[in-house]
Length: 191
Image (cartoon, rainbow, N blue to C red; front, side, top):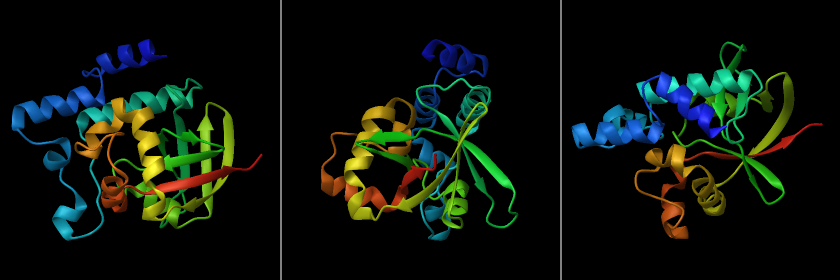
């Protein structure tokens, strides 16, 4: 599957989101988060990192493959009802299995899917025609270090740029410090 992802990503002009972010940093001297801006930096609100052009292109490619039943390293389509419209909103996600539980981590912060999920009792994880409804519990910041560490071990190659230098070797204290900017949900599939 990695070969498919690489080929498709090259089609959209970048080999990985991380490569694109490194190119931005090399050319501008700023990290992707600094270049793209955060809601917290602009309005004093919770951390939100906007998806740049390369990340958007890769998300489209991963989303298309996942909607057609091809999971890249465990990818799924998250479907949640919009908090205002009530319409289904979808985005590709990387669920994390840790112990006996399944988690959704928001590496770009308090994004629209996070806000929509918080306004509902649950959502769906989709892979092709397979649909799994789920409910969730959002973790408190002090509960996140173990999950953030496991998430970074599993997905750093793809989302490490959104963690601004923090990796799986960070101390619990460092992970608790950044935890408010990274929503984490323990999900329970139904069926």
